[in-house]
Image (cartoon, rainbow, N blue to C red; front, top):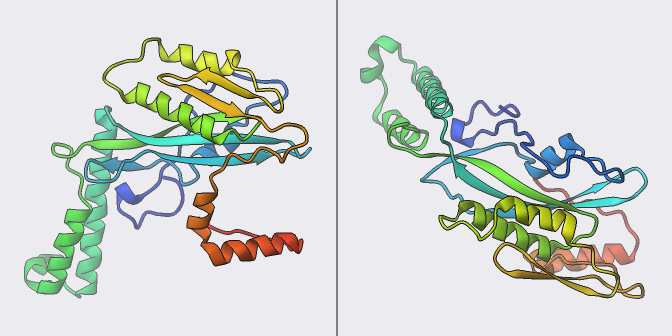
Length: 261
């Protein structure tokens, strides 16, 4: 388990994640930092869900800034896949049995009752709240389907967010689709790693993803730097007044700290 979150139900806890595979194994000018990428791909750790939870894929990005000021951009698509290991499903049910037993003990203690007189001593309010709690905090291996979070990430020298987003979504569809794509998945990964070059400054590049072509454009030498992030999300997250205030602070060269989860 990652962090001190044992008070939460097992499906609300986070667990330690790890990098399963990365390609290529190493690049001289940009060595792979496994710990940093792992932490940035899953900042809250590994999580589990059931069929009753929301499992929509989510995209986020990150930046690794090195000592010399050089930057590497990461784009991550997180999704949930079904847990096929009977051992993991059994372990999850055991965690729930332990958790519910602890919750039951705490409710009994708050009601000042002994275990021998559990049924008669808990008042109606406590019994109702305990029943709701157990229904919410339940996992039945014979009834529920367990899912675990997984992510695919592209690390690039330039922030081509829209192109990376489209490629990751197409790759995810290929992974989860019942109808496999025309070529093996390794072919598409090899193509984007070794056969798709960076577009020259001031030029556009069209390459093929898994299902549809993808276009990315690089600004020229006399243009503003590449900024492929959607401004609409900034307005939605910060609001108009806050964004104007942040922009004013930038113009006044003030120090700015944005804090969030």
